Image (cartoon, helix red, strand yellow):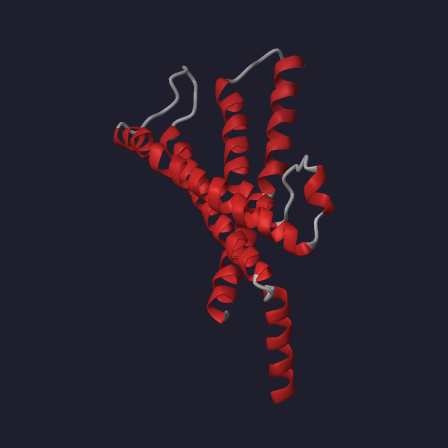
Length: 185
């Protein structure tokens, strides 16, 4: 159980750090959009690079922030049944949902995009639009990176749910370990 707890803690910590680090991109995105709106409507100028920068920032924010959002259970749930279940019932749903949908889909996306991304890196892909941004291949590399983080968080959810289902929730184990450390101190 200590190994499972360590793995879950490491994955959670990684996705928390990534989530907090990229959260600043939302502020940058707001500034870029405001700049774009100001120049387009007040100065009557438009820049392809600025418009592309908006969706590049959004893509990175979305791809790298999805795992953190999953960790904090921030994704939208439209499930009337789930909210009525016990902690153990929710753990069963999360366990099977992760094993049947989340983990396989993440692996599929990572596997399926490899050729797409390899080709982009090989040709050092840039924007096809005049005045667009270079280094599009870096943006495309965020796809497997983001889904890799989601895959890791899916593993953490699976392990946490499994422990809850067998009656050994990780939170209780952590509390028990902390009490033992305090007793020996």
